[in-house]
Amino acid sequence: MSDKPIFIRSFTQQEPIPEAAIEAANRVLRTGRLHRYNTAPDEIAETALLEEEFAAMTGAKYALAVASGGYAVGAALRAIGVGQGDLVLSNGFTLAPVPGAIASVGAVPVFVEVTKNLTIDLEDLNTKAQASGARVLLLSHMRGHICDMGRLMEICDAAGITVIEDCAHTMGAAWDGLASGRHGKIACYSTQTYKHINSGEGGFLTSDDADVMARAILLSGSYMLYTRHRAAPPPEAFAQARFETPNVSGRMDNLRAAILRPQLADLPRQVARWRELYERMEAGLANLPHLRLTERDPREDYVGSSFQFLLPDWSPDKITAFVQAAARRGVELKWFGAAEPVAFTSRYDSWRYAPAQTLPKTDHILAGLIDLRLPLTFAPEDVDLLAEILRDEVIAHAP
Image (cartoon, rainbow, N blue to C red):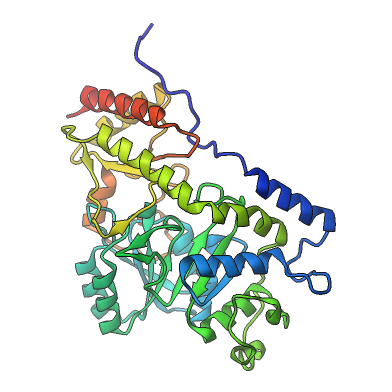
C-alpha cells in the first residue's frame, strides 16, 4: 500500500450560500414576486437594486442583470448590431459559450493566437484586425488572465474595432487600476456556480453607451417596463429602439438577485482569499524543472479562482500518465491538449460550426496546458498538499 499523501477535498464543492443571502431569498419567496417586474407599489425589485450595486462596483454608468453569462455575450453582440455573416475576432483559447454566442447571432468567429501567458496575442490581433475586416473583438479574459489592455485598445481603436470584454473570470479584477470590463464598449460577466459570485446561473452586461444599453435591456425582455430599472439610460434612449429591438428574453429574476446582493458586497474579501490560495500554489510549484508557470504582469490585479501551468514539450502519453497519476492521488486536473474534449476543455478546433482555422502557436501552448480549480473551500494547507502532490508527479513523469 502506497504511503504517498492523498488529496481528499472536492474541486467542485463551493462554499455555502451566505446566511444573509438565504434570508434575502426567503423574503422574496414569501412574497411570491419572483419576476423582476412584479413589484408592489413603491417597491424596488431586488434585480434593480442588484444592477445599481453592480454598476457602482464596476464604475459603469449602466448595468443589466440577465439569465447567464453566455446570454450576456449574445445580447452584447446583438446590441451593437452584429448579425448574419459578420466576422468577430476572438481568442483561440476560451470556453465554448464565447464562440457559441457568436454563432447564436449568425456571425463567424475569427480566432486569434494566444501567448504562453494565456492572453490574446497582440501581434496576431493586429495582423488579423487589418486582414480580416472584422469590426468587433470579443475579448475573453480566459481563466482570469488579462492582456496589456492599453496596447489592445490602441490596436482596436486604430482599426475601428468595437471591443466586448468577456469578464466571466475577471469579476473583481483590474488592469492598471481600472476594473476589468471598463476598457471596451461593453462588458459581460457570469454568476454561474463556478464563477466569483454564485447564483447557479446568471450574468451581467455593463456599458457607458446609452443606446447600446437601451437595446440590451429591450433584448432581455423588458417590454415597456424599462423605467423600473435603476441602472439604465434615460427614457429618451428607448424612444426609437423600443420599436426596433426584438424581445429575446433572458431576464434575471428577483430570487437570484437576492442571493447575489450579499455576495457582491463580500466580493473584495473573497478576491483576497483567492489571491492567497493562488500565490501559495505558485510558490509551491516555483522552480520545478519541466513545468512552466504563467507570468503575471504587475499591472494585473487578478482573481486567482483557478490555476494553470504548462508542461512544455511533453508527449501526449507522458501528460496522460501524469494526469492519471494525479487523479489516483485525488487531484483533478483538466488538460486542454487531449485528443478529445472532456468536460469544459473543448478547443477552437472542436467548434466545427465555425470555419476551420489554423493556430499553430495556440496549438503548441494548449498541447501542454493543465488547469485546476481553486475553490474557496480549500484552506491554504490544502493548496500546500496539492503543490506537493503535483511536484512529486511532475518529477516522476517528466520526459
